[in-house]
Length: 326
Image (cartoon, rainbow, N blue to C red; front, top):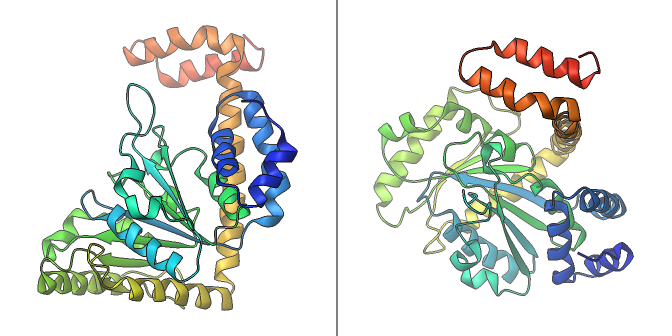
């Protein structure tokens, strides 16, 4: 990748989609020179970020996330908004690449001139969120997108990761009656700023009954903010029914949390946690790359796996090698 950061920066700010795609590829790269260039690029662009509404959407497989996101995205672009979708796919075990192909699942939105879809492999990252999704979100904001939607794979990983990078976290679920609550983690309900029972067109009565169950469950939990009780609504992404109510709740949440300072505090805390996460990530990289550790690690890990050596002893030996005490 031949880099001209000045040109790339200018083109991205001008809204050039090819430049945005190239910049996201840059921040996703694991090459040391690309990572350094990406940090420089982000530092230049940071004054142009932060204005977008950041929304995380998760849900069980088959809940209709892509269908709903496409319908919602088309509604928003028709209303004059610019929408970026960062759709995090499961990684292929063979190639490490995306395997779901969100652009093929969102055909209308993919050709919308005011929308941008970027599928990224999760890379095994906790919660199904790609390692560089945060940076990609900032790049989209700098390119002029004012609604950023992060779609997670929703296959059981911790949703804390995506909830910790967005302003509004939405859980998309399917009708199922009272027993459905048993299959949903309490933590997910606690994290959600709103719950949407999708596919209500299939059985409206069942969907509403499920919504009542979740409302009752939410009443016994302490809300994250005293000013916001997560609403529970029914909708049909397939028929584009109820998505206007969905978006009105997103807007109302922004108004409420901006007025009480919660939105700014949430982003501030997210940024600080992000910084320390990056510190841990780079320390881990430096530790594994240190020659003394690299020599010891395979044998020590093998011994730990086989039960021949306590993990604490192996860790002590690698740390001693890292600090030059071996």
